[in-house]
Length: 158
DNA sequence: GCCAACGTTGGC
DNA sequence: GCCAACGTTGGC
Image (tube, rainbow, N blue to C red):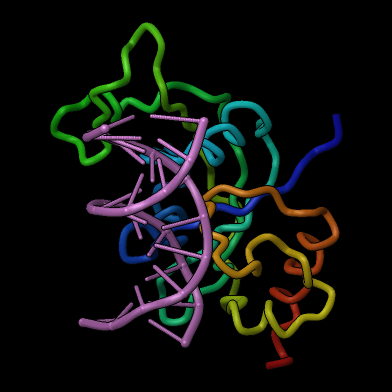
């Protein structure tokens, strides 16, 4: 099957592209939305590229690139009563929540801001730009992905 | 900090 | 299985 492309959101105050650059890779724990989980569980393959998006930020936007670097595995935080992600309804024999590990690929010299994405006619229809879209893990069309990358490289233009 | 949009929960 | 209440997301 053809490679797919992804976008994952993180609040930079919580975990930013700089954090990922320093740590090189991280387990994407804490996803508690079924659609987002299903993408990680069913569709993500190792090596596929991920737009790393800073949400709830000043400004928000795509901050860099990561790649999927593990198969889906149970998210350990669901079993930890001290974790904010603890889920009493989950069991080790049939874990509700899985996650993947992503690893650092690059940090864009300049954030590709949400405003800039919205201004780009060719990105019309991108899920991220749909009003009310809140999915923290979402697929990205190959064409949209390529165009976001091109925006990231077009540094001179503001 | 506000609040609209959305997902989840739980009473019935 | 409906749907109101509630919690969360995330732009502004």
